[in-house]
Image 1 (cartoon, one colour):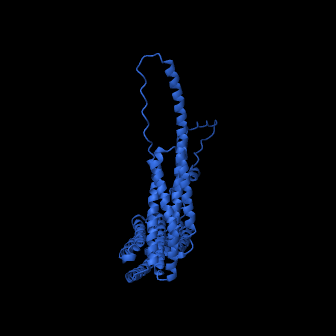
Image 2 (image 1 turned 60 degrees about the vertical axis):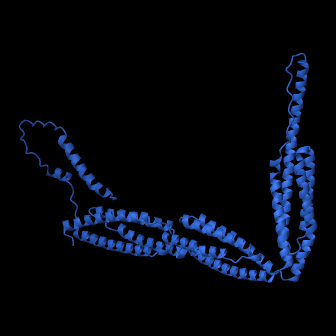
Image 3 (image 1 turned 45 degrees about the vertical axis):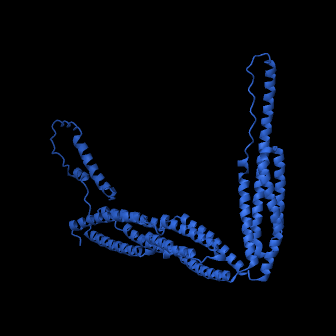
Length: 501
C-alpha cells in the first residue's frame, strides 16, 4: 500500500517545535533575582498568561459544512471511478478476437486444415505418362505443411519470424505448382503436328552434338586413366583441349534455343555443359598449382642431391656400410582432384538421358491410354489447386486483420478511456486543500496518479495477443483501492467528529 506521509509532516513539525521550545526554556538556568532597592516594596510577580498563550498550539477552525461537501465530492468521485472501471472491464472482456488463445487456436486449425491439402496431393492419379507429374506437387504441399506446423508450435506474439517462413515456403510451393502446370500444358500440346515436327527437328540437331559429347566423355575418361603416367604439363594441356571441346558443345546447344516446346530440354542441357566446363577449369587450376609445388620440390631435391654427391666424394675412403638405395616412388594418386569432375560427368549423363526420354514422348505423341491418364491427372490437379487457393484466401484473411482483432479500434477506445480518466483525475486534484482535509485528498491524488500512469502506458504499448498487457494496470488498481479505502476512513472520522452531515 502506497501512503504519502507529507500530509502529516507540517502539523507534526509545528507541534514538535513547540515542545522543543518549551523544553529548552524549562532547562535553561535561572537568572539571579535582582536585589530590591533600599526602602522599595516587592511587587507581586507579573502574570505569565500572555507568554503562555503565545507558545500554545493554535487551534484550527474546522468547517462542518466544508467537511460535508468534501465527503459528498469524494463519494461522487468514487462512483465515477467505479463506473469507469466497469466500462473499461466490459470493453476489455469484449476483445475476444485479440486474445492469445484465439490466435493459437487459429494456427492449430490452419495446420490441421492443410493436412487435407497434403493428402489430396498424395492422391493425385499417377500412371503411365503422368507417373512423375505429381512429385513436385507433393513436394510443394509437404514444405508448406511443415512451415505451418512450425508456426503452430512456435509462434509468439509480436514475432514475425515464423510468419515469414510460411510466406517463403508458400512462394517455393507456388513455383513447383507452376512448373507442374507448365508441363501439363506442354503435354497437352503434343497432339499438335507442328509441335511434334519441332521436336523431331530438335532431336535431329541434337544427335551429332550428343555424339560429340560422348566423345568428350571418352577423352576425359582416357585422361583420367593416363594421368599418373603423364607429366603434369601434358595433363594441363589436355585439360585445356577438353575445356575447349565442352565450350564448343555448349555454344552449339545454345543455337537450338528456337522453339518453346523444346526450350526446357535445351536449357537443362546447356546448364549441364556449363557445369562441366566450370569443373574442368577448376581441375586445370588444381594441376597448375600442383605443378608449381612439384617444380619447387624438384629444385630442393636437386640441391640436396648435389650436397650428397659432395659428401660422398669426401667420404670415398671411408669403409662400408654403403648408403641404402632410395626406393622408386609410387605412382601419384589424383582421385581426389578428379572427384568433382567425375560427379559432374555422371550428372550430365543423367540429364542427357532424361532429355532423350522427353524428346521421345514429344515425338511419338500420346496413346489413348496416355490421353486418359493425362485428363484424369489434370482434373484432379485443378481441384487441388482450387482447394489450395481457398485455403490461402482463408489464411490471408486471418493474417490481414489478425483474426478480427482491430488494432485501430482498440487504440481509439484506449484514447477515449484515457481522456475520461484524465477528467476524473482533474476532479480529484480539485478537492479542497484545507489542512484537515489534506490527509484524505492527498491519498486520493496518489491513487489516481498511479492508475492514470498505467492507463497511459497501456495506450502506447497495447498489442493484440499479449498475455500480460494489463498486469501493471491491475496492480495499480489494487494500490488505488487501498488508498481510496484509507482516504474514506479519514473523511469518515472527520464527519463523525464534527457532526457533518
